[in-house]
Image 1 (cartoon, rainbow, N blue to C red):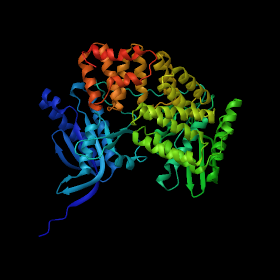
Image 2 (cartoon, one colour):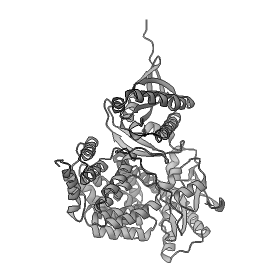
Image 3 (tube, rainbow, N blue to C red):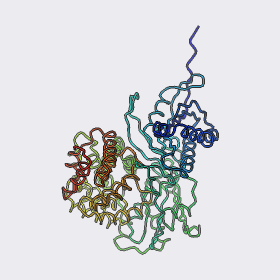
Image 4 (cartoon, helix red, strand yellow):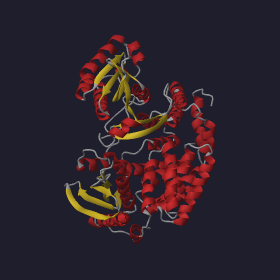
Length: 591
């Protein structure tokens, strides 16, 4: 008799387990079981049923659930984590029950009521990487939920895990109201919505892709980002950074709510339809104070006219807002160099890849930008971006020869500034290259020039703060970071590392710990955050916490090297770095 055929199907798999289950059971076995059963009955099981999930099996402190779609799985996970946080808020922290959740979309093998296969294994491995109270998902799941669920998805890079041949690319689901527990059990702070500034303020939302092809998303995003870049050149305007305005991409949103959260009065939204050699761009400017339309327009042009469309659109926004431009600002808005359209599209794709801030994203960006430059050798923005990616390779040791990457990045950035002195991104890249080359005065001058050309450049402000930290001006860095965070209220977690570095340099170790715990709540795989946290604990006389944090840093990165960081980090005063080492030694660590 022939063996029965193995049943396979594609499914979204949710794996979950309880954080610190053994500790909870050891402390209060009966109470832990009672609380866990209550959570399952009142929160977990109803959420699974509501989203058409199937509980495959319970495994003591864990669970395996099958869903028909990633959207159902992620939405269910968000509801579970939110409800459990609310439930925990009323009780003592040492009694909290928190879940880690991992989600994957993949092929599964069905055996009666049970399921097996790589689709299940990957979900289980991702769950093990997740933070307490957090949700990590695979690339396959991220691709399916992006723009369908109102969340932000942060790339946490590739991870080699047990019994899986290839590294898994992992993403973190970030729900803005979330307050997750950090290393010491304290909740991560949610930024207070900024007040609307005195000067005219605007957020440019990601334009909708109306092309009928998801692959064209990069193009509509690129148009939106270019408008932000143009408006950021105007000193009379307060322009929210792309990182924050794109959080609301394709979400069901209320413009007044978005404006309040971002601290602006005006919101620009629109759409892009690209078909063949034609492009249609529509846009409308909304006054959040009354919901009225200040201005709206539609542009139907040949694709080769896309730059003229951007110029016209920006000029009309300036007119609608009644802004008074300086002569230099007017020139910068009207003297755009013509760019080959194919090179422009390659640039947009390369820029999108560079935003990932991963080794693989950088490699892809190199290739795309190199092709753009081959087509249009005078394309200064493409040169600036590829220079930045080379310096990023150096800073993260993503190449076998980091020094070569830094040298190439510096040479390319210098070339950009010679090519077009008013390309702000060129000065940004050059500031970064000079900083890592330990030429801090030059780095400071280039960061200042970047901000002179683009006063609303969030990248320029973040770079200036980084240079100030290494130059010994920690107080100045705090002021700069404050200005930066007003432009980018949903700032990336690396900004919290800069904040912690500045606080550490001022001897404000408790404030530095607070910033680091916020970062680790968003990215629990940051070895640099754990290393600085360890030093902070050493300085305030908590050796056990110091050793725990240091062990975490080495667990994440076994090759973490004090010597390499001493060699690479460009502190003007070497004692600044040695103070970080001193904190570890105070706790009895030999480093």
